[in-house]
Length: 231
Length: 228
Image (cartoon, rainbow over all chains, first blue to last red; front, top):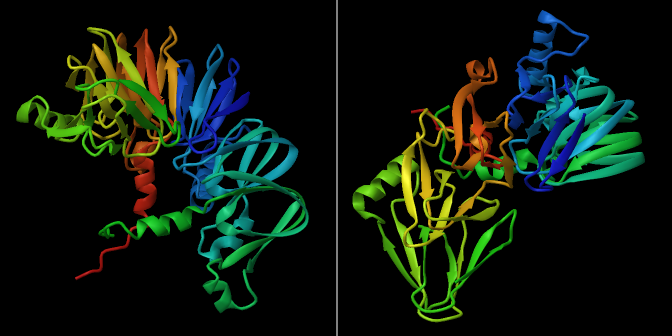
């Protein structure tokens, strides 16, 4: 299975080519088009999960991960096929090839992965609960490509040591990096006034993916200009 | 008249350079970006009030269209669609038809080119915009836009499935069938997923983003009406 990303960077579209009987799991709503031999199943589950447990995991993902409740599985029946996938907002997509390591993905950045990759919600996502930026992480582990989307462009940053990243700009990072949520400045007031609030202090060695725009900043800037809603 | 599609794919714009006086191009109202002062712009309800009203109400197009007429060689006109994204031209032979999502129409050249609003068959066929689509019949050239990049697909013999919100247009010779998609998704989320199964010989044109998704994202950020 492979992902081919077209129309980068602004309006990217990912073509996922499947061998006969191969499966890809994608965030519900990401499907743009597909060949006719694709069998779609909602409420996807990992091969190592079943029934109620998988439903619970789905709920957990929705509540904590910011990801859609349902992921769909797309299986090419009998012959090769493809599914094309796109995120809802403007921006690039990137593929990270997992080779046994773990990748921690910001909830709304996850798009798709094959069955050989397992996706789970990390409870350390709670750390971000107080940032006001609904920071929740999913953990991808196993072997295979993971497709992620960004709001804006994607920058790949390899670190060995320490770096500060804004919570609204993080897309994903490899598990060799530990993170802690810290104030942007020494004091609470200056942290708030800087417009950065809480930031991530990344420590260790590994790869980070960051997005060049922050969805919350964009939503705040544009949404405030819209007429008020009823509730 | 010469045309050039510039600034594609992200912010496509149509540049027209007129070869001689009295050449015309018709556009959706509001599409004009810039033009030489010698170009004459006339606003009209094409086909009269009833036809225009039908287009407006059923096709989601604007009521008015602008006709640009040159008065000399070398004059320029720039036209652009509202949303960001790609812009393309489709040349149609006499009698050849092309179906467009309402809203994808930007401009056309050709006095005999016919724009007709057609029943789409199923509610929400084009991403909730309406029941209707635009049937464009040549001879002439129609310019159309996509929200995002434009992705072209040759329908394979066994058919092809697309998400309705991403459909821009398709060539004649294709049959389609709309159905619900996404299992339980419709129960929990507004904007139930509809997909369209195409069969036959022809091409489908898709847009890689959809405006509805952006609108729902922004909705959360709208201020909330104060009570009382």
